Image (tube, rainbow, N blue to C red; front, side, top):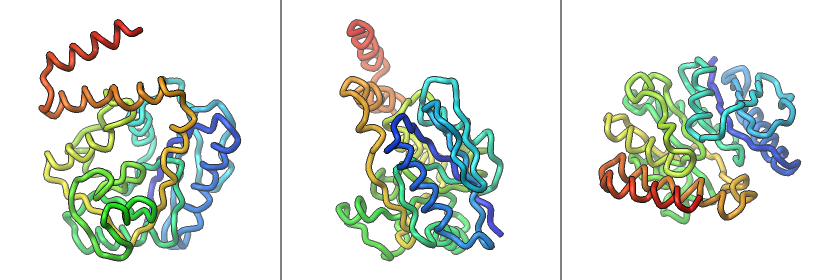
Amino acid sequence: MKIIDIILLSNAQTEPLRQLTENAINSLLDSEDPAKIRFNVLVIESAQTRPYPFPCCQTIFPKQVFGYHKFMNLGLRQTQAPLVCLCNNDLIFHPGWASAILRAFDADPELKSASPFCSFNHPERGFFADSGIHYGYEVRDHLSGWCIFLKREILAVTGPLEERLRFWYSDNDYAKTLEKHGIQHALVTSSKVDHLESQTLKTKSERERLQLTGDERYFFEYKWGSRSYFSYLNHKRKQLFKK
């Protein structure tokens, strides 16, 4: 039997958002034969609600200020299976999605990170279901930040996820880190997980969205060399004056 840790971030501040998380967990648990694959689900819930009553599911309620990678790192520290999947809560898992990625890993031992196919996103970008394995690091093409399946062993090489990024550009940073270390990543189009596209983010105010999104670009560009340190500091200074 394969054991896969699922780390799922949720912010069920309303009943529809809680239902979104529950639908994701339901589809996940129904997606594979439990005699062959067991999912250990860890929900990291930002809203102070109640635990999710599913088998093999634990809910924790962090006291820290939200950070996408910060919370994922928290989940990684509290789990230990050699296989782990980092997930949004706005997902629908299709039957056999995990088995398909495991077959890809078995076929190519150098493949250590993968993303599934999304029927909403990928056809618009020129990728189609069951069209094979597409290697690369392009975000939203090869790498779907909403669902990343990886071998935990790569963290010994890359270190923890970059916590200085609070939300946006987290997937870009992960992709750049894999590429830097020569760790293979691919889109596995026989693995299907649909992303319902930023359902939690849509509940935020425009100002909150900007804080979670646009501000991140300056740090990402500075870190990876396309923006000078002076430019980055100048942006931070302007943000302080706005406050």
